[in-house]
Amino acid sequence: MSLNLKSLAVSINDRPVVKDVSLSLDPGEVVALVGASGSGKSLTASALTGSLPGSARASGYLEVQGQGVLLATRIRPGVAAVRQDSLTALHPLVRIDRQLIPVLLRSGAAAIRAAAATRAASMLEEVGFADPRSVLRSFPMELSGGQRQRVCIVQALACRAAFLIADEPTTALDVVSQQLVLAALRRAAEAGAGILLITHDVAAAATLCSRAVVIDNGTVLDHGSFSHLAGSSAHVDARALMESARHSVARGRTATA
Ligand SMILES: Nc1ncnc2c1ncn2[C@@H]1O[C@H](COP(=O)(O)OP(=O)(O)OP(=O)(O)O)[C@@H](O)[C@H]1O
Ligand SMILES: [Mg+2]
Image 1: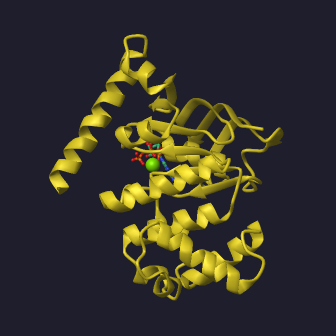
Image 2: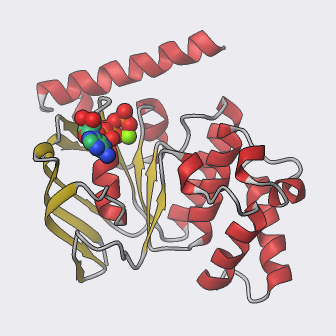
Image 3: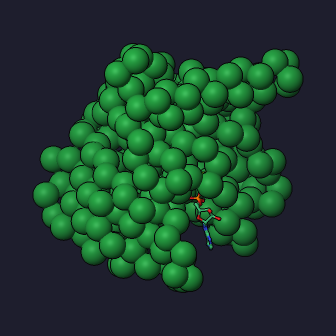
């Protein structure tokens, strides 16, 4: 039972920002959504997760596990989100344990509070926290941006949703943490989750994703396997975008090395 988005269009204050985006996700599949900054990736993610801004008007058709979903609603059974902005994704006045434990209890990942706390700590450890118990006692503002981002990933994984929409889940992370997060996403996919991975890191995406959807200016340019998108049969702009993303991330890595 898959997730299908057809002909998504989003306008904000009468300005069309997403014009025609269609994509699908099967259980256990990781698909990359790639495109330049401002191309409409996060708004597509927001439409999928029911978090479009109030000023947005959306049209199109979304079906999750055989059920049609109204784009205007905020309810998305079976879909969890890692938002690009980790500061607003977490409640600023609530300690991390109180933001993770209820999610683990609700999803059935743990039956009682003590087991949920242990599970939360081990999930935090898996994404690179050496002292997860102190993270659980912290408020979001006491964590760095990269630490908050990893907490958001744990929170989304804790939902055990059929589909996970991950909007740049590794951007604020060092290379070691990036690898841990990608490994956690891979395990979730192996356990059956369908994952949409929004990223500028085409090289990392190619290691995890079976295929990619390339968007530009709110429209899908091309989609398919990474070898198709690198080859002569790909849309020429999609191929150029994939190529430049690969190089800009490689340059960034060199600059921060
Ligand atoms: N809340 C908003 N109000 C007005 N315009 C918005 C809003 N959110 C996004 N936009 C506009 O919609 C377009 C697409 O934005 P979006 O955030 O989806 O880009 P993106 O592909 O995720 O970019 P990035 O790679 O920088 O995260 C941009 O032109 C942006 O200015
Ligand atoms: Mg974005």
